[in-house]
Amino acid sequence: MQTSIVIADDHPLMLRGLTDFLTSKGYNILGSAEDGKNAYNLIVKLKPKIAILDIRMPYKTGLEIAEEVQKHNLPTKVILITFDKEEEIYDKALEFGVYGYILKEFAIEEIETCISHVENNKPYFSEEIANYLKHNSNKRPKELELLTKSELKIVTLISDSKTSQEIANELSISPRTVDKHRSNILSKLNLDNKPTSLFIWSTINKSFL
Image (cartoon, rainbow, N blue to C red; front, side):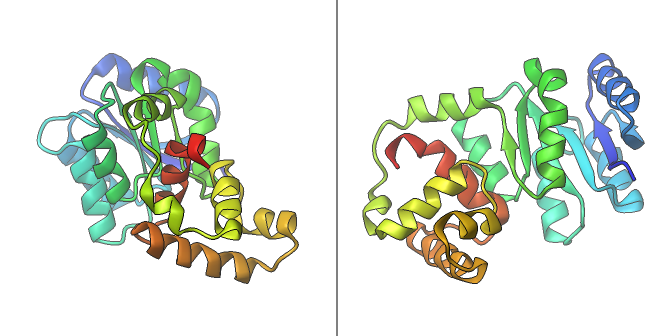
Protein backbone atom coordinates (compact mmCIF):
# COMPACT_ATOMS: atom_id res chain seq x y z
CA MET A 1 0.00 0.00 0.00
CA GLN A 2 1.34 3.43 -0.91
CA THR A 3 2.36 5.80 1.87
CA SER A 4 -0.39 8.09 3.17
CA ILE A 5 0.54 11.78 3.09
CA VAL A 6 -0.85 15.15 4.17
CA ILE A 7 0.64 18.26 2.50
CA ALA A 8 0.49 21.86 3.73
CA ASP A 9 1.83 25.03 2.15
CA ASP A 10 0.43 28.55 2.14
CA HIS A 11 1.51 29.05 -1.49
CA PRO A 12 -1.34 27.55 -3.57
CA LEU A 13 0.94 26.88 -6.56
CA MET A 14 3.51 25.02 -4.48
CA LEU A 15 0.76 23.08 -2.74
CA ARG A 16 -0.87 22.09 -6.01
CA GLY A 17 2.45 21.30 -7.67
CA LEU A 18 3.53 18.95 -4.89
CA THR A 19 0.07 17.36 -4.56
CA ASP A 20 -0.24 16.73 -8.32
CA PHE A 21 3.32 15.45 -8.58
CA LEU A 22 3.00 12.97 -5.68
CA THR A 23 -0.47 11.83 -6.81
CA SER A 24 0.96 11.13 -10.28
CA LYS A 25 3.65 9.01 -8.62
CA GLY A 26 0.97 6.93 -6.90
CA TYR A 27 1.22 8.27 -3.33
CA ASN A 28 -1.95 8.32 -1.27
CA ILE A 29 -2.58 12.03 -0.60
CA LEU A 30 -5.15 12.10 2.22
CA GLY A 31 -5.56 15.87 2.30
CA SER A 32 -3.93 19.25 1.90
CA ALA A 33 -4.07 22.57 3.74
CA GLU A 34 -3.01 26.19 3.20
CA ASP A 35 -2.40 27.02 6.84
CA GLY A 36 -0.86 25.36 9.89
CA LYS A 37 -4.06 25.06 11.91
CA ASN A 38 -5.87 23.06 9.23
CA ALA A 39 -2.73 21.03 8.57
CA TYR A 40 -2.47 20.00 12.22
CA ASN A 41 -6.20 19.13 12.35
CA LEU A 42 -5.76 16.89 9.29
CA ILE A 43 -2.78 15.13 10.91
CA VAL A 44 -4.75 14.49 14.13
CA LYS A 45 -7.81 13.27 12.24
CA LEU A 46 -6.26 11.25 9.41
CA LYS A 47 -2.98 10.11 11.06
CA PRO A 48 -1.01 10.00 7.80
CA LYS A 49 2.31 8.21 7.75
CA ILE A 50 4.02 11.41 6.54
CA ALA A 51 3.21 15.13 6.70
CA ILE A 52 5.01 17.45 4.26
CA LEU A 53 4.87 20.93 5.76
CA ASP A 54 6.00 24.38 4.78
CA ILE A 55 7.93 25.92 7.69
CA ARG A 56 6.30 29.35 7.45
CA MET A 57 2.48 29.21 7.45
CA PRO A 58 -0.29 31.28 9.07
CA TYR A 59 -1.66 30.17 12.49
CA LYS A 60 0.92 27.43 13.04
CA THR A 61 4.38 27.03 11.51
CA GLY A 62 5.68 23.69 10.30
CA LEU A 63 8.00 23.66 13.32
CA GLU A 64 5.13 24.24 15.75
CA ILE A 65 3.22 21.38 14.14
CA ALA A 66 6.30 19.12 14.45
CA GLU A 67 6.49 20.06 18.14
CA GLU A 68 2.79 19.19 18.68
CA VAL A 69 3.16 15.89 16.80
CA GLN A 70 6.08 14.97 19.05
CA LYS A 71 4.36 16.15 22.24
CA HIS A 72 1.22 14.11 21.56
CA ASN A 73 3.10 11.05 20.30
CA LEU A 74 1.33 11.08 16.94
CA PRO A 75 2.57 8.41 14.50
CA THR A 76 3.11 10.91 11.65
CA LYS A 77 6.66 11.64 10.50
CA VAL A 78 7.25 15.28 9.57
CA ILE A 79 9.13 16.52 6.48
CA LEU A 80 9.73 20.28 6.37
CA ILE A 81 10.12 22.24 3.14
CA THR A 82 11.72 25.62 3.49
CA PHE A 83 13.80 28.44 2.08
CA ASP A 84 15.51 28.75 5.48
CA LYS A 85 19.06 27.64 6.09
CA GLU A 86 19.38 29.23 9.54
CA GLU A 87 21.11 27.04 12.07
CA GLU A 88 18.63 27.96 14.78
CA ILE A 89 15.64 26.70 12.77
CA TYR A 90 17.59 23.60 11.88
CA ASP A 91 18.38 22.93 15.56
CA LYS A 92 14.68 23.28 16.39
CA ALA A 93 13.79 20.79 13.64
CA LEU A 94 16.27 18.40 15.21
CA GLU A 95 14.83 18.95 18.67
CA PHE A 96 11.28 18.19 17.46
CA GLY A 97 12.29 14.94 15.75
CA VAL A 98 11.73 16.11 12.18
CA TYR A 99 12.57 13.34 9.68
CA GLY A 100 13.12 15.34 6.51
CA TYR A 101 14.28 18.86 5.79
CA ILE A 102 14.43 19.95 2.18
CA LEU A 103 14.89 23.28 0.46
CA LYS A 104 11.93 24.52 -1.56
CA GLU A 105 13.89 25.07 -4.73
CA PHE A 106 14.74 21.33 -4.76
CA ALA A 107 11.41 20.09 -3.38
CA ILE A 108 10.13 18.37 -6.54
CA GLU A 109 13.57 16.90 -7.34
CA GLU A 110 14.20 15.59 -3.84
CA ILE A 111 10.81 14.78 -2.39
CA GLU A 112 10.65 11.15 -3.60
CA THR A 113 14.14 10.39 -2.27
CA CYS A 114 13.19 12.07 0.99
CA ILE A 115 9.95 10.05 1.31
CA SER A 116 11.68 6.74 0.60
CA HIS A 117 14.27 7.50 3.31
CA VAL A 118 11.55 8.40 5.81
CA GLU A 119 9.55 5.25 4.93
CA ASN A 120 12.63 3.27 5.97
CA ASN A 121 13.01 5.26 9.22
CA LYS A 122 16.04 7.07 7.84
CA PRO A 123 16.18 10.86 8.10
CA TYR A 124 16.88 12.86 4.98
CA PHE A 125 17.79 16.48 4.36
CA SER A 126 18.99 18.53 1.41
CA GLU A 127 22.70 18.33 0.81
CA GLU A 128 22.70 22.12 0.42
CA ILE A 129 21.60 22.47 4.04
CA ALA A 130 24.27 20.08 5.28
CA ASN A 131 26.92 21.92 3.23
CA TYR A 132 25.74 25.29 4.48
CA LEU A 133 25.88 24.14 8.09
CA LYS A 134 29.32 22.62 7.58
CA HIS A 135 30.68 25.92 6.18
CA ASN A 136 29.27 27.67 9.20
CA SER A 137 30.82 25.34 11.73
CA ASN A 138 34.38 24.66 10.71
CA LYS A 139 35.57 23.84 14.20
CA ARG A 140 36.05 20.20 15.13
CA PRO A 141 33.54 19.39 17.89
CA LYS A 142 35.30 18.79 21.23
CA GLU A 143 32.91 15.93 22.00
CA LEU A 144 34.58 13.81 19.30
CA GLU A 145 37.55 13.39 21.61
CA LEU A 146 35.30 11.54 24.05
CA LEU A 147 34.50 8.79 21.54
CA THR A 148 36.42 5.51 21.34
CA LYS A 149 37.72 4.16 18.00
CA SER A 150 34.76 1.77 17.74
CA GLU A 151 32.30 4.55 18.49
CA LEU A 152 33.90 6.80 15.85
CA LYS A 153 33.61 3.99 13.32
CA ILE A 154 29.91 3.60 14.16
CA VAL A 155 29.27 7.36 13.91
CA THR A 156 30.96 7.36 10.49
CA LEU A 157 28.73 4.50 9.29
CA ILE A 158 25.65 6.29 10.66
CA SER A 159 26.62 9.35 8.61
CA ASP A 160 26.52 7.05 5.55
CA SER A 161 22.84 6.29 6.31
CA LYS A 162 23.60 2.77 7.51
CA THR A 163 21.06 1.04 9.78
CA SER A 164 22.06 -0.75 13.01
CA GLN A 165 21.73 -4.08 11.20
CA GLU A 166 23.99 -2.93 8.34
CA ILE A 167 26.56 -1.57 10.82
CA ALA A 168 26.46 -4.85 12.75
CA ASN A 169 27.10 -6.83 9.53
CA GLU A 170 29.94 -4.55 8.49
CA LEU A 171 31.70 -4.67 11.87
CA SER A 172 30.84 -8.34 12.58
CA ILE A 173 29.09 -7.52 15.85
CA SER A 174 25.50 -7.97 16.97
CA PRO A 175 22.84 -5.27 16.39
CA ARG A 176 22.45 -5.20 20.17
CA THR A 177 26.10 -4.21 20.57
CA VAL A 178 25.60 -1.48 17.97
CA ASP A 179 22.60 -0.16 19.92
CA LYS A 180 24.64 -0.20 23.12
CA HIS A 181 27.39 1.81 21.40
CA ARG A 182 24.74 4.16 20.01
CA SER A 183 23.36 4.97 23.45
CA ASN A 184 26.90 5.56 24.82
CA ILE A 185 27.59 7.87 21.87
CA LEU A 186 24.34 9.78 22.43
CA SER A 187 25.16 10.38 26.06
CA LYS A 188 28.77 11.46 25.28
CA LEU A 189 27.56 13.87 22.58
CA ASN A 190 24.73 15.05 24.81
CA LEU A 191 22.09 14.23 22.18
CA ASP A 192 18.57 12.93 22.76
CA ASN A 193 17.45 9.47 21.78
CA LYS A 194 15.53 10.34 18.60
CA PRO A 195 16.41 8.33 15.47
CA THR A 196 17.20 11.56 13.62
CA SER A 197 19.52 13.24 16.13
CA LEU A 198 22.68 11.18 15.75
CA PHE A 199 22.29 10.90 11.98
CA ILE A 200 22.02 14.67 11.55
CA TRP A 201 24.87 15.36 13.98
CA SER A 202 27.12 12.84 12.21
CA THR A 203 26.30 14.23 8.76
CA ILE A 204 27.06 17.82 9.76
CA ASN A 205 30.35 16.72 11.33
CA LYS A 206 31.26 14.12 8.70
CA SER A 207 34.39 15.98 7.59
CA PHE A 208 35.81 15.64 11.13
CA LEU A 209 35.21 11.88 11.46
